[in-house]
Picture 1 (cartoon, rainbow, N blue to C red):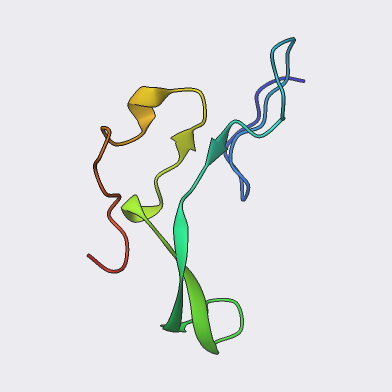
Picture 2 (picture 1 turned 120 degrees about the vertical axis):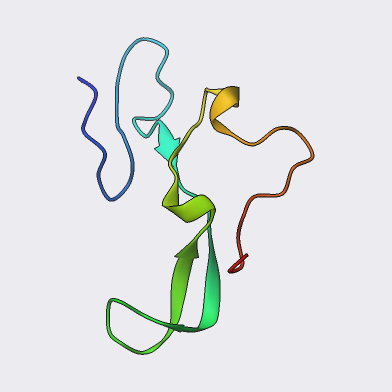
Length: 74
């Protein structure tokens, strides 16, 4: 399977060492006070690090050890 373009669930790829087709992820948190872009109601997922995608197998894509991700409106 060729590498996909980024989409709603990240980048997908295949190959002999692929244990899952999903190779990237975003980190997020539930904000019960935010307004949902989906239905306009209270409660929404908020992205950490400004919505950055993190490669599972690339340690350089993540923050250094013992460093908090930028989440929770900070």
